[in-house]
Image (tube, rainbow, N blue to C red; front, top):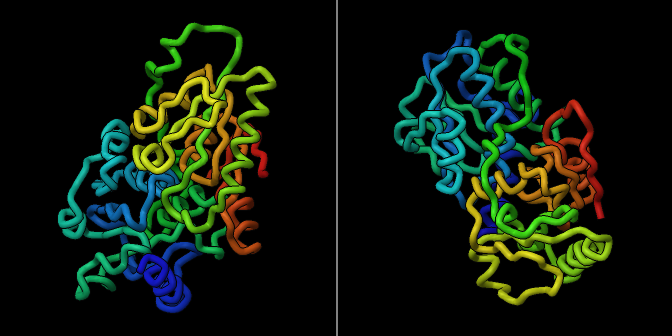
Length: 312
């Protein structure tokens, strides 16, 4: 069922959405000629919109808000605290639909009431191969243009809001000179693109880091822990099932952490946003999509200082 939905969405992206393309990754059904009185962003369907997507799209919301347009956001549940800390007003999908302009994911097209689908909507696609430049920068700039706002003032930054630094479980462990790598070998979305040898490769890198004198903290969701409860013997600390999005952000902001080892998931994206090195195993995609990910999405924003990213 899930794969069938994805195939239908791909067909829609290549036909209907392409016909209304404003710029790569933006299908414009609003065709505004003046700024809207308000904007509602709905990314609340956790089946099709994931944590990483929120990080790519937060700069777009901020760019509109910074230009004086009232903004409300309907995120997935795990991201509610993130947007609250970032100063956004949260809303229900129903309230989002009441705004002068509605912005949502192309993958949530079916969630929009049929009579409203082509009225006052922008649909965003973070993995559209027509995107130029870094995904977050590109979508923020061209959404601002579609909303009839100044794309240059104030300057747009594609780096997502960073959660305030705070206490982490690493602070309670006896300190020594060895820094930490954050390790995760699981995926929730696109699980069918991963085979056991991919997970072993990531574990081997973590083991190598440990032999080099680093410490390893393993993270993951409660589902990750339930599916694979066994320890790998490389963990100095196992936090699976014990970290919220906010906890993970604070962990990655810690000066004790130097990098991440993971698939091309939110672990890598958060770490890169926090300026940490990343060892990344791409899930199994077409060669064209792998090139797109490396060129435009990892990292998703133009960084002032280069982050060390190694693909394995």
